[in-house]
Length: 139
Image (cartoon, rainbow, N blue to C red; front, side, top):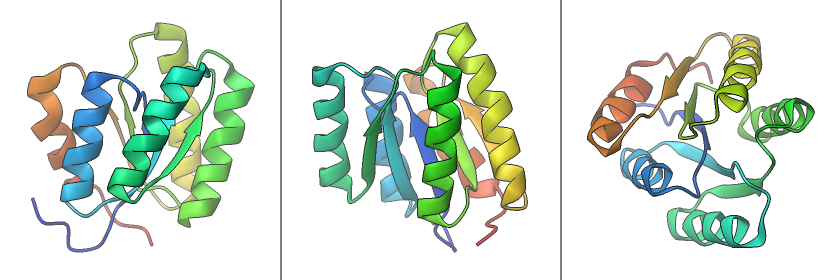
């Protein structure tokens, strides 16, 4: 899936195996990425930092169950990328998913529009990349 304009993508849950697979596929497709660990522990944060260096992305670590932390992170990432075209989530926690979706949709609306994608399993990586590619680039 060649991306004509680089999509500005936030990926939450980049410390997971699925998150890593999605990040690599999106980077290969030409997306501009910010990878975020949904857990603030040291091993998750380091794993995401290593992946970000490998892919030429930026990295953060937050507690995704903390709504205020998610709000601040989304605003900062959107500012750093010049807006958001897509938010990809690879976390299973329903509370984190709920407020992340609400806040991400609000932040993407500030950029014009965007797509919110929940990655369910490794078979869905291709679907994630296709959904991001189909989203409008607002930059």
